[in-house]
Length: 107
Image 1: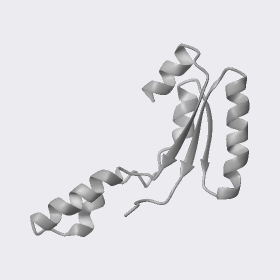
Image 2 (image 1 turned 90 degrees about the horizontal axis):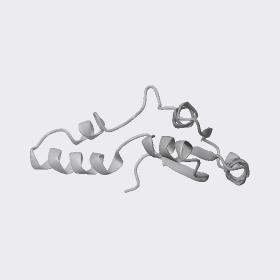
Image 3 (image 1 turned 90 degrees about the vertical axis):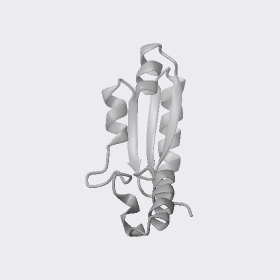
Image 4 (image 1 turned 180 degrees about the horizontal axis):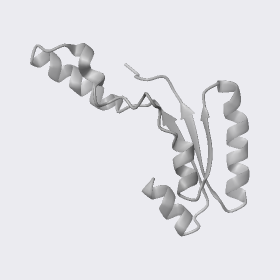
C-alpha cells in the first residue's frame, strides 16, 4: 500500500493488478516442509499464512490511499470490464488498483 500511496502522492498514473490468493502461499509451502522435518501436522501450514475470515479489501485499501480501487473481481467474466475501466482511469492520470481473487495455492 505504500507503493500505491507513493504513486498517488507523486501523480504517477499506473495500473496495478493484484493476483490475490488471500495468503502467503510461498510461506505455506515452507511451513509444510518444516512441519514434515519436525514431524508436526502439515495441516497447520496455513496458520498465520492465510489472510481470510475476513478477507482484506485491497481495493478499499487502495481507495484509502487516494487511488481508484476496483474489486474484488471474483468471476472471470468481470475481469475484462475491470481492466478496461482501469485503463480508462490511467489514461485520465489516475492510479488504479484491481483486486483479482485467484485460487489459493499453485502446487
